Amino acid sequence: MVFEENQFFYVALFIFLGAALVLALQLVLLPPGVERVAGSVLYWLPVALLVFLIVVSLNFWRLRVRVTREFFEARFGLFARKIPLKEIVGVGECEVKFPNYWGLGIKWGFDGSTAYCTRFGRGVRLKLKHGRDFVVSARNAAGLLRVLKKNLA
Image 1 (tube, one colour):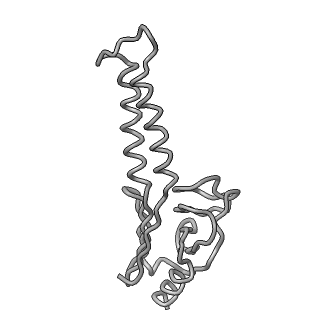
Image 2 (cartoon, helix red, strand yellow):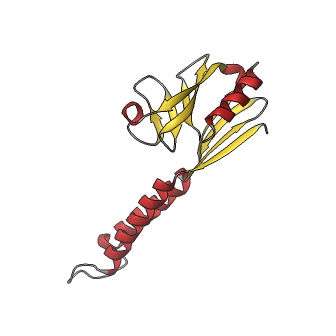
Image 3 (cartoon, helix red, strand yellow):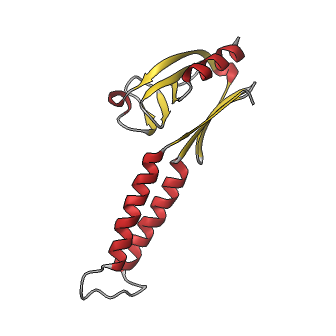
């Protein structure tokens, strides 16, 4: 392992907690006249939504960026992008901005890039031999850039 950085995506956690509270209240405070029957759609729909939110939140709560001597890897839970260093033709620092990606997470930018981002601000752009440029947000963009340049040389 040459470089590793974990970025925590607290927005996903807050969305989950807020939605879980609303769904739990809906289960407890069903409208009068609605039975709390296990076969009722009004009973199972909030439960299904809560399970879905738990799965999504657990998947996107952390972005792990790793560089080894052979690979660059960015991982959001089950979704990972593992790029062999020999496929990278150039690297540079960039700004991850809302107007280009319209949000956080795994995004396709209007500039033709794919991004894994947990925050707006400094990031690193990888220019690839084949396919779209890849952008990753980074707390330590300068350190990531330095390690990538050293291993690409």
